[in-house]
Length: 440
Ligand SMILES: [Zn+2]
Image (tube, rainbow, N blue to C red):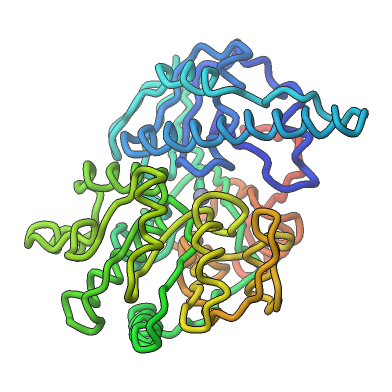
């Protein structure tokens, strides 16, 4: 099995509770492309329901996935408890049982199954099935996986793209490319979109930091723990080195982001040329002067007592939970502060309300006037857009037997499938959920 992700979209969430399409005990192995929860988030359930094989992935993916699975398990436990209390109060029952999808113990029980592999290493999965992992340039440790199946002297290769990263991104290497494969499963998250050309991220960041410093406010950055937080630190470090911003204190105030940053530090072998140069010359983006990693709640609260401009990077990325809510409470009513968004804000989230220009918001049961400046920096996406997906596929020197377009909203997948058919004339399939195909 390739990946074992959690459904996060409201319309598909019920699938998390359904039995797996294949009995878990009959699976030999899981090949995990990367640590995002929509790729690894159901592993604890798979293990609890009988899977005893190995979960192959890179070292970094294994370490980050375990941090993310523990966090996910905590959220499931909290959710179940919250629902149980609410249903009790309202004397009713909801569509799903008031038990967590999986617990912290379930998550921990899945950890011994992880089997780290290196990029390029040939891994024998079972009789006649081999796999190699290749850097996907999406998040630290992310992989594209090439599987070779051998039967009666015949071989077929299948490339699973996982999530495809982008060229020339900080910290990470460019996505690996493939010259040939018999079958291809390609993701299509941004299969129908093109990232707008964003102004230089460092320039935008410098402008925001300098103007907020002048106004005497703070800069609050809601951010995802994996990759985005580390990229912001990368850009800040660059600005500090080039002396383009004042020496302000920067707090990474998210236990999950701090733990994940530790994984980055341990895996400098995965960095691109520029990042490796910085590390060799003692200019690590994770250790510049003024940067402080926050662990405890007390330390987090103490940030509010500092006078003068500070920057706080905290989760969650869409302001739906986490410590960023407390920093918003203190800063969103202050005209001199800036709330800086660096990621996509889904409909229905607090972050979306703020970027859409709400004048008043509710946080933790209280109402607050929005007086702070609301800023956004685009260009952080770690997903290839349609043109980049096309560039990646165009490295194939001969037509695959078939390309399956997967892992996108139905519209994005259909759209990208059509685009590929037109441009390449290849055999393209956009399978529906649960569809079966014969690879011959
Ligand atoms: Zn991903």
